[in-house]
Image (tube, rainbow, N blue to C red; front, side, top):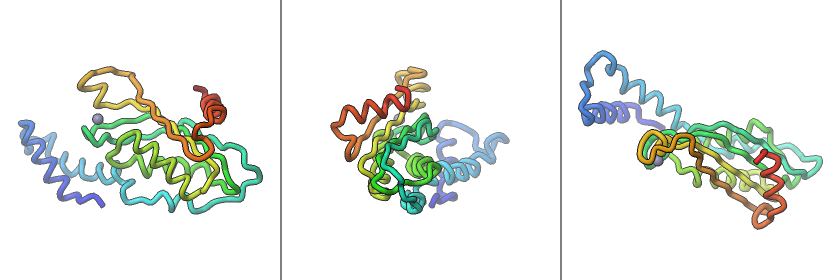
Length: 185
Ligand code: ZN
């Protein structure tokens, strides 16, 4: 749980640290506003992907399931700046499937916290492996990192791509290429 009082204190200190007047009109409500915002953007820390993935359905066949272009917003843990983009998920069921909206929910659980993109990609894949026990999972994330585009090297529009394979997708170029084709890459 986000300790709103602590966040408020910290934001006040940060504002002072950058030379702002914390009492000027425009900033009076800012610490409280940011504290509320952090409850939302770090809300995934209080959630368990297993809760979203526990309701499964019997699969009639075990054909690959692909859910592409799941939009996400996360925060890079090195700079506390946003990174955001799309996640694409594929899995090969082993008798069990899950509602498609639950895949998006799973992405949110891991996106809504301070994160590293590669780690988020792996956590999504591992949660699906653990709770859905499929034959294989492949997850790809494509994101723009504000710490790359608004500061530092300043390369607007550049994308960071991370891919994780588990189970039958590992070392199976044919399956991996099928995934890339299905998501249009
Ligand atoms: Zn960063």
